[in-house]
Length: 396
Ligand code: ADP
Ligand code: MG
Image 1: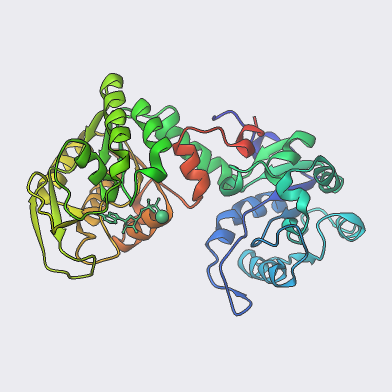
Image 2: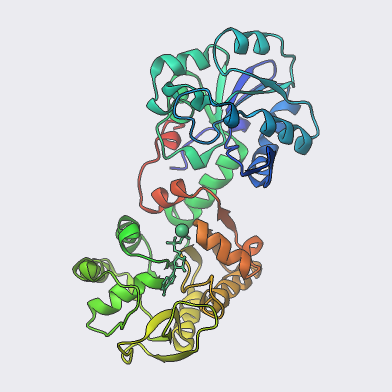
């Protein structure tokens, strides 16, 4: 996977650079309410502009389903980008055709333009070669800085890379390098922490991880299915009883591959799914019919800590408990702080991703201490599943 060209491999002065970015930012009252996605790509925009490239940004916004929808225009996003990079960003009301060509022809070296939402055309998501050609007409090279859309073979993630010389932007480069150091060619032992609600949404991911990591720590609601597979009582916990055979198969494969699976040995139970519901920590053997498992217990956290201390690499997706409800965030917070401490001490590489995982790490106040936090959502999960991401593959 680490086989891709970067901005260090190309002279961009005077070149028209089609730069794919993810600017699908949250908006409130017509204004960008969270600029994280913009700040992730500013170093790429600045590097290109400083090097004399003509920077032509391509992005999607929302789900206009192949039609022009004014409410999904990128105009307000272009305005926010200009403020953040403190340089003019010219907004262009179309991404292909005469309007786009005229705007690009008028550019000087170092200029930055934002073309309108590529999803206003159905050819974006259908990866139509004619649409990709129409986009490519305004560029000399293609730079993909949108890892988060690279699990989809769209015209601006995949199609363009087959028409123009293609490079990874700075944030794509950072993401691919982080992922490579976590699972591609990691330092062992590698410990994976997988939690979250359900086994069913993470089957492929678990299957891939048992083949690659040394220890797989399973927590969260999905651990209950594994406990049930071992014949343990789970009371009224979230549990996918139809998947106990699958859970058993995953454990068998893990044994064959020499991957240790660590399940909760003690759990925090309550009788309702509610913040501050009266709770107690009990053995995972002793869950009563009215109990709901909402977090891992302290003995389990001790076992996790031992694995962390021995690790060189830790990959994390999914909270260990119902972290939205205090105090059932305790297990996740304690484990996350341990990973943060080991990372700060330079003892491990740590990579985490997933929407709820990020929320949980932020809640624990440690997100910035991990070696790398992926905000890529579905693309990160597909990568954890071991899938080839078409937008990344096309960069090779
Ligand atoms: P991510 O978004 O990071 O991939 P998931 O969406 O898979 O994570 O899982 C997060 C959800 O799992 C949270 O809403 C959390 O409340 C839930 N969860 C974790 N542990 C439990 C549990 N023991 N019982 C019920 N829900 C749980
Ligand atoms: Mg989630």
